[in-house]
Length: 305
Ligand SMILES: [Zn+2]
Image 1: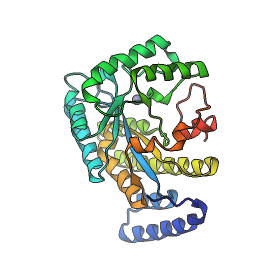
Image 2: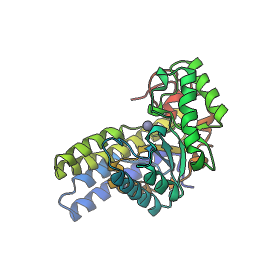
Image 3: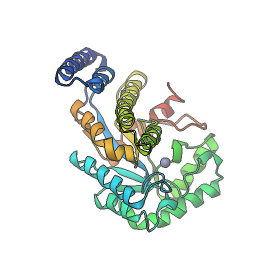
Image 4: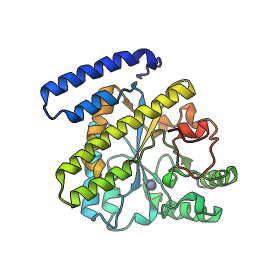
């Protein structure tokens, strides 16, 4: 396990390493703008991380053909497999149909875990207890055949309830179905990069798409560093992390680059089963409100910018 807790002590060393990498990269490659961004903006202390993928079988099924959805799944599976990663994916019940089923089968067939991500991807804040029960149960029926191990739930938009009462109601419903909520530590707006990336590709603008992809990877690195630093500064030490991404085109094409970066920085990939046992996830969530937040922010009582 790689855990160098005295983060600040090592910061200078990482910074020097970053500058060295920057110089080397620029010497090697005149178009080293990307490498410069990577080297200068992202310094993390190697930790452990579980990968979770939301909105299975794949995002925007109305705009994604079943062949594309299957291809995205296979590309993501290949990127995960290269690092020996077993991920957990969260499925939206109403998006599972005969057309999208091959993608879900491919994901499960690669050995990954499937969890429940509601029936229609609603904002929990807009639901009654009964509606939440119905959303959870309907997808649970469909997922029976896919769940043979841990039973995990992921709230759409990471919104877990706007009052202590509604949070408690959700906890009761999940317990009734035997589901464990799986929060994330590294929250990000990766879906927005995917939307812009798809638009650029649709317009046939490969150069813009490539820039968005580079920005995407840099953004994910920055978010990783942000939440790691928040944990170290505010919780007294780093945690085991859970990353949120979606089953979409930008990850099909570029998740491999992001995973290479974690690997190169010395991070260890772990299962959700391992990450979720970190004390962070049994600390009281003292945030009640409409936002979807990282678990690190939840135990600290709200959003940190
Ligand atoms: Zn989702």
